[in-house]
Amino acid sequence: MSLNTPARRRRRRIQLLAVTAWRCAYCSRKISIDSMTVDHVVPRALGGAAGMANQVAACQPCNVAKGHKLLGEWKPPQPLPLVARMPRQALLAHRAAEPEAA
Ligand SMILES: [Zn+2]
Image 1: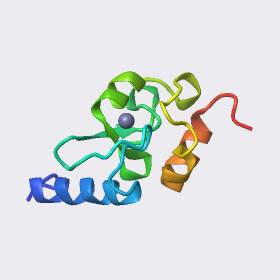
Image 2 (image 1 turned 90 degrees about the horizontal axis):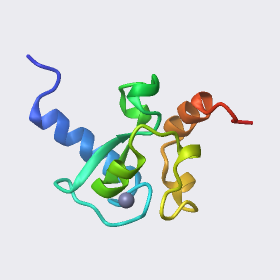
Image 3 (image 1 turned 30 degrees about the horizontal axis):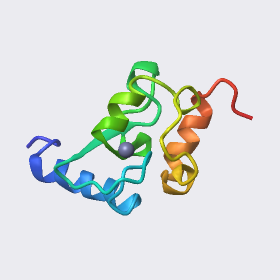
Image 4 (image 1 turned 90 degrees about the vertical axis):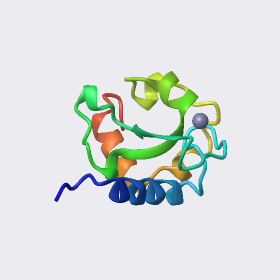
């Protein structure tokens, strides 16, 4: 039995959407299970973890714009609510990866 069944994938997406109240973590735009993308807060290309602790629900334009950047290298459209909407684990992972983190 595969761990990555469509039902499991859908359940993970709903969990991510619930964290941000069905909004993009970066711009607060309303997103749906069909329109959302899964963004790795610390990009996989930069050694970020694969699991949900490093994932947020994001709209496609934000995900494309952020690309393989850390948050310090990319300014989200609405940076203020970001911290509140970001899962704590994802923030911790990001702080650990950000070179200038205090
Ligand atoms: Zn967005």
